[in-house]
Image: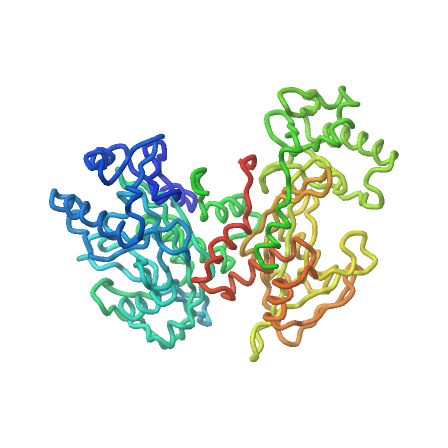
Length: 288
Length: 288
């Protein structure tokens, strides 16, 4: 396997299996053909025309849309959907970060509607005399998603009502006991995007990459039970683990590959260099 | 104006005015409708079919293609083309860096055939106590292209027969008197791409971005007459000059914007952040 294999693995979506989902004139997401029958059962809420799904246009405010879709989702939950993943964590529904959301949707339901999720992913690193090192956490074995896998130093989903930076600072405290004054030094330096499909669920997500240089005497500590343990690895070990294994959670590999690029671990004359950098920001014809 | 305006200015190509130019099955470049009559005058060398130009397939080696096209170009030069820009500097003809070139073509002629050019662009910076600083050269007023404009610390076109890194090391010595041992510490950290049109000329180019941290006591010196002078600027002055002026050569703005992103000068919650980062690697539908 190789770095490009991780990118391909994240970008496994077969978009032909989906139809777009519109709120007014804006494409809010995508609905898989196997999930579409659930929408078809609710013609009061979802209309199908011209190979697309349209939310009831009389829901003319974000609050009305959020409430109506939530009632529908709770009904689905009652029939066994979102098993164990319902978090009461509202995600903003928007294709472009920074735009006022069209509505909010429960995190667990976002990929069922192919809604784009955002999130901050931080790489905490240390410049030691013997070279660059990266703080690598292992996810708690009790987490419902990707238990026990390796992760980015701090990472989180992006709920509605908070900025990416403030969310990162909050996650730094919760996941790694990084104090606010230190977390405020994190810098947004890139993003990664991918179109990931898991059965009828689609994640056309964008994760914003942050870097944070940490002092040698600082040690992150798990705080909220989401992280099993932290280890400080030489960057070459991280590089080889990403290159040769699936030990990191799928999208965390892309954040680390972006880190390797920005920190000069690839050679300009590597015939894959430009291709790797380009594909970290995968686009789809439908993305515009 | 804004950062996005620089990206739009670099990506001004109207591809509908061009037709692709093929060597065998591979698209080598693009020919503008106003330049096409010159190719039509040479049906022994260029065939037009299915809305595309095709190089004579009996030219079945890179050397044969290079020689035949060169003879054609010299004839054009005799009729006034490439005025003053002919350099006897062969560029590789390839769409993907690292692939064996289909042929070589004189640098001055590359944009007439919409051939993708590559090149290394280096940002030399200093971490001073009072913050990040960047070495900013002003191009010689005697240069045939973009005289007197501001430039990236070291930058050059990419001729055939040398790697990007070796070319950068050579340019570091020639343009800025940066000794080899120091230049070897430069790291490839990103690339920028754009589709720039100037009349019938098309530059669908890719520039590989290198960073080089320099010591406070090192001063680059113009060596080959290409640079008028070097100044060390606080990064905020570079940021504002890029944002507010056209003082930098057009594509150098993109390399600097990429530098600003990677060094954390943009905020994650800036509604333009993701858009700026994406557009630095502009693609066209025809690029695949």
